[in-house]
Image (tube, rainbow, N blue to C red; front, side, top):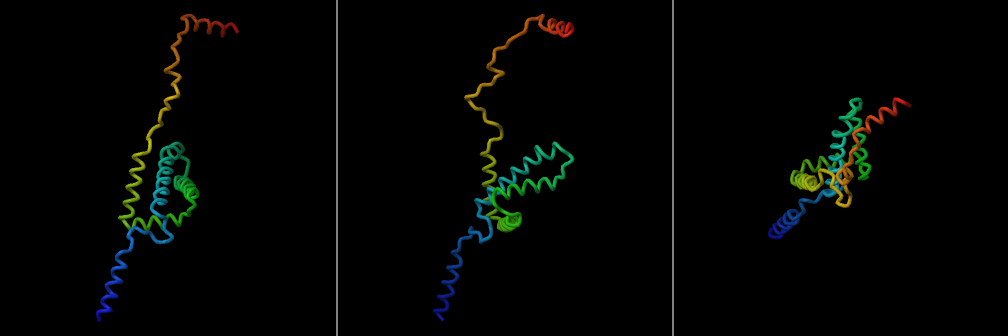
Length: 147
């Protein structure tokens, strides 16, 4: 009787010490999932900001699917693998929160505008202002008429 209690307590102890943040095989690890989701968000942002707003004749779902397939190709994934991993993380909110928090931190760290290169000089600000003589426009017009 004591031995069976000992075995039961030992089994419970071993199973309770399992790493809760470990993902099963066939599921993308959190770092890779974060990278894929970041690229998908960037692709979606590019689509809505530059592609779909510029041409109303584009089929939005086909174009979105095409860009997302490019992201999957970059990360060597299939749509099914991503969906399986995404469903897993959505059903495990503690892991999904970690990924989403890291995405929001990455978005906060990313530059939102071009960074000016201090070595390059703005040609409009560094060039001295030159003015044309007052009668230049008259001479240009007269030359065109006489030609």
